[in-house]
Length: 359
Image 1 (cartoon, one colour):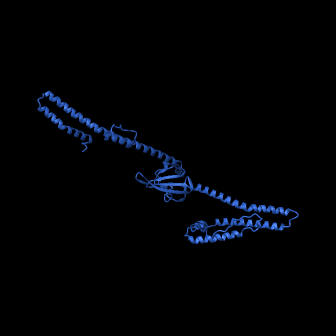
Image 2 (tube, one colour):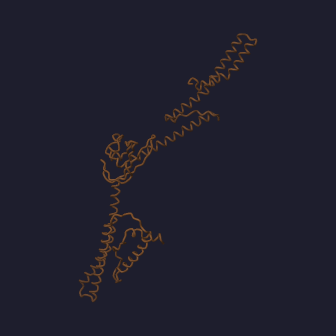
Image 3 (cartoon, helix red, strand yellow):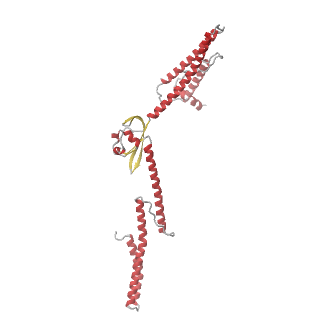
């Protein structure tokens, strides 16, 4: 029953405990040969002491419980600065107060860490150059960072609560892939990443959009730079000897009288120029062939057969390279770049790995 609360039960228990002693004292007073004044005085003192001790016992039990209730209520409301006065000794009440103070300190440290982590997360989300969106189980927007605001062209207050379809993000929520998307704040290729998390007992979806246009343009620019460096190097290797030999031949043509081996030197120079021009032609044909290669297709590859074909093609390539070397050792020579390619691109890519695997 609500009437018999804990403090009232303690009071009744204390009164009941002292009741036999009070009854015995009253009986002895009335049976003894005492005056009425003594009897009344002793009765009043006994009853007063009985009631006073009962009130003291009640307060000693109820007040610590009220203190504990107030401390727990403060922690429930988020106030971890209130501390209980620790009682001296090692009695159970002192242990309870110590544990409550320790719990309050632990919760304070945890809340401080959570606040710092939340502040750091918000700062990162605000400054990161990636659009982040969070949707509830009904696909309504509940969180967006600054990059997302710039992408959609609106502030977070006007975006909150709108469905993903109205924001143009329904296609991005479908799967994690690279898509061509158009938004008020930008158009291009976007990498979409989505994951799920739980908050407040409900399932939410987190969507991250990364703009790949600039990284792809940077990679393409770097690839063109490398290609131009390679082409420039190969062209210089072929054109420099041609220019040098052409200058030498011009000097020979102007020299009077001409040397006895004039025609032989001219033929030898023309032969070197022809070889270099042919090498340059093969170089350009090789790049043309690579540019015209069809898109790669995944297919099963028989490794042993591929290894044998790679070995045979490598032997043929070495034989052709040897046959292309200049016979005249007096003239500067180098192995020209040529367009001898494997019959299949996958054998060329996996040639060394296949040989190592079967070694």
